[in-house]
Length: 77
Image 1 (cartoon, rainbow, N blue to C red):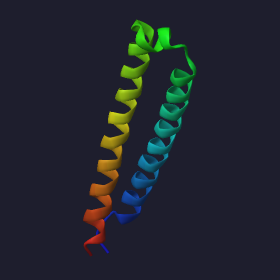
Image 2: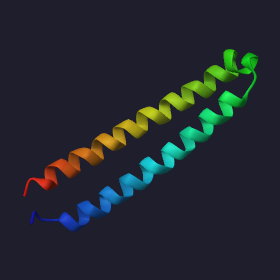
Image 3: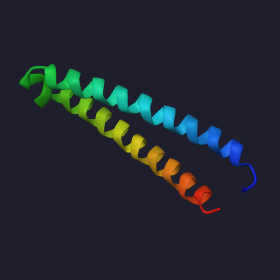
Image 4: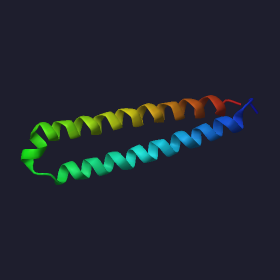
């Protein structure tokens, strides 16, 4: 067993929780945006909403990548 594996498992769990929270928030934002009028979606507010969704997606992807990197490294025992 590699050193600090228990700590890494705790970190992975926290990352996984963050990914899930961000995913839920992103889904809610997407649902809200899709429920808005076409005028809202095409306007500045809709663009801002979409930028927020895109930023959440980017953060989600980076966190998932960090999780995967830790998992792959610590599986090589």
